[in-house]
Image (cartoon, rainbow, N blue to C red; front, side):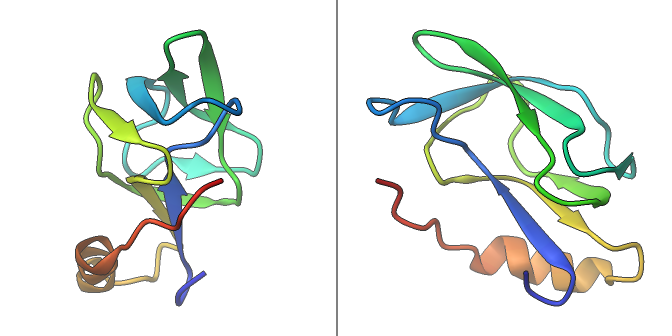
Length: 102
């Protein structure tokens, strides 16, 4: 995690999954999250699954709008502490490079 910033990326829910759609955000920007809280519904060609917060913090950005389809590993949101400046989050989003997901 970079300076209290954590990327929320499109999860991989099956061996053949290559992309998913943000069907619905369950949380809003500014919401306080605990690890395991449901944050969004991710839809694939086979299922719709609830994505859970990987860490506690504040939802600071929803990078992907509802209805957006993105490849596995793409940035969909950002969790960060309240004291992280918006400029750092903007830079994190601008510089984000997806990791290769097997």
